[in-house]
Amino acid sequence: MSGSGPANSARPIKSILILGGGSAGWMTAAALAYAVQHDCQITLVESEQIGTVGVGEATIPTIRLFNQMLGLDENEFVRRTKGSFKLGIQFVDWARKGQTYFHPFGSFGRPFDVVSLHQYWMVEQAAGRVDSLDDYSMAWAVARTGRFAPPSPDQRNVLSTYDYAYHFDAGLYAAFLREYAEARGVVRHEGKVASVQQNAQTGFVQSVSMEDGRDFAADLFIDCTGFRGLLIEETLKTGFEDWSHWLPCDRALAVPCEGTPNPTPYTRSTAREAGWQWRIPLQHRTGNGYVYASSHISDDAAARTLLANLDGKALADPRPLRFKAGRRKACWNKNVIAVGLSSGFLEPLESTSIHLIQANISKIIAFFPDGDFDPMVTAEFNRVAANETEAIRDFIILHYHLTQRTDSALWRDVAHMTVPDSLQFKIDHFRRYGRLIARDMDIFGPTSWLAVHVGQLNLPQARDPLLAHRQVDGGVWLNKLSAAMAAEAARLPTHQQYIDQFCRAT
Image (cartoon, rainbow, N blue to C red; front, side, top):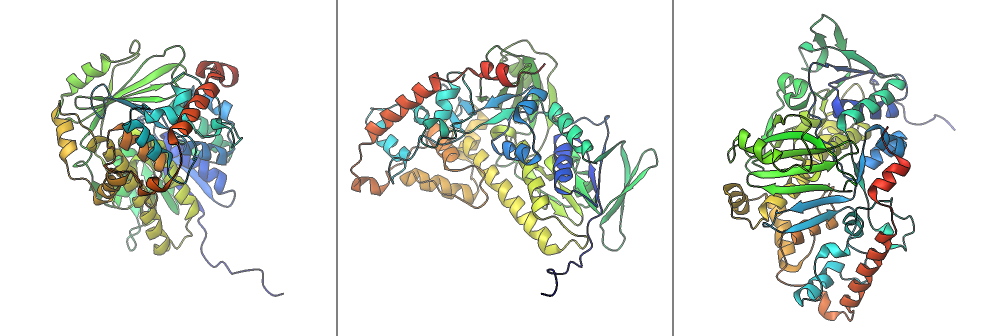
């Protein structure tokens, strides 16, 4: 036999500079320290004088894959971040005032026929024999009783039909990952960037100069500088695609309050006059915030609304944030890749902020470049990133557009706006026959779309035609399912008992 495989003539990446810390910077550093095991120096530069946003305290189940990839122990991670568990999101007053629904992690029940469970539910619900679709979600059966345990590995057990994520302190998570990354060779430097040097011919970033005179050069740069986008935008002028005509909320106020005993194992999102309020229970406190449209409410009025709707005493003054919904026209430009808020912003309605960080990190590993930076690789990275972000954008717009509220200008505006064609297509299909149409790179699957369609009262005009050809008593199956879920949920420990036993913060 001759030869040992294809020759590798490419110039390998020898150095990576991550600019900015916080969740984005230290998640990137930890993941690259895991993936790039030798012959490449990873450096992170951040300034303690520059604050991080740090409000992304709720997540979706994909975060578990990230932590597992790094080999993190779940109980230690929850303990170190003063975290709690999350089975989904409860939406209050979104469809109309007084209307509440749950977006569960997992599925609605388990399939018992070739026709989807929700089609049988619609038949029974129209006849007045069943109530909410939530009653057939194991995640809600557990969450509404304030209980938690990991799902059963036994696929025959109804306790296997839900999933979970976490609530955690984003600052503590960044510190936890910093410890992980530095133990694996990542070198951190403190300081503020004064200038950026580019190659005169190619425009590639060559180095950054600090205010104290130090210079840091690298082959690959990761921009984690937040909304500013120091490298991706200020230096490379990549451009921004504005989505504020679909997502008009442009400000937020965040405030922690005293925690409550027996924290709920879910996030709550309550629609307000000019936006919505989040509630995220941690072990040591509850995170709260009001995301709102400044064109519909003053900052002072938003602060009064937020502070009047807390579960406990506020532990600080509300902290203001300003943003614009949209994304960079490219997340990867030349030798710079944007991760986190530098790549764009979608309001945290569905807890996707951490996921979008994770998604770009995963693509960096999947499309890891050599020193030639093949444009074909960059283009595919950007295509996938754009599709992922647009799919989440459409899902968030869905919550607004399906509202039946007419009590304030914001809700009247979003109910009547023209939405992206990609979203209108999905709305039309569900409204016609109750069918859920999947699209490329959609992180939210059929359960998620079903929960919002039904929860926001977008009920189909007709049923799946195949129902007329089935001889299945859906009502019997649904009754068995809800009874089994209630019985199994009652056997689980409370959320607080589970935390106390396995991962209580000291």
